Length: 355
Image (cartoon, rainbow, N blue to C red; front, side):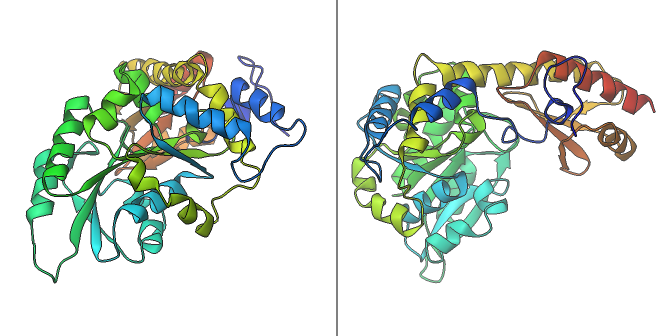
């Protein structure tokens, strides 16, 4: 049985939830579109009107004649996209904090039949041009896997954002050496909202070849979009989706919420709200004695160094969040996070640190 918190009409389980932006429910626009897609009959396997319109809308958003595919989750999106870009004897350059390296259970290697992941130096989760170049040129002999793809996470797993110049700099190095550029955009919406730029400016115009655009974290019920800015790279990708079990028979349930979110800027409004809630929390944490911000708050995550007793006290009060980075706590905000919840968390955090 859940107990309603006095400051909100939502249950305490939701109110106290800062573990991930995955834990929030479906945003209203997406829920309405999902329900509307249930009316009547529609062609299967992506041959329905909703999927066609959603693909066209994504092309408008990115100002590009891109090839678009919808899949169920981010692990599949990243893994089969990377597998389409490199052979089994080749390699993918990534940060050692990237989800393809730390949180996808070897799926990129599995779907590519063994392509190796090579980690490059990073600053707060962001690869650098110099670091990428060092990995590319480290060895060129046949005994070493040949780098073929650079993957960037936007925004990063450490809550930082690649600027346009940083992306274009890495892309230029990649192109000069015959590599493709993949972007893990699980929180791409938050990055676009934070940078206030056109989506094209931090993707294909900056040299990105394929984007895995995250839908779940921005409020969709399920589903990610894989966007190939070079159509040739996606020519036979539909076969990979089918082989990987990612071709939805009732595709309209994946695509219709996308169409709703990309209409009238709903995706950016929700992302901007999540970012604003994180900034609100960060500002409050900065004034609490004993709380140390580990990283700059650029999107919807707040990273705080806390002593173990304070972490234990917060969790005993019911707050849900992840801990890592040697005692660091991560608090994630979403489209559904309220200012009241943020203020209550900051209040309890201060109490926990005071003992």
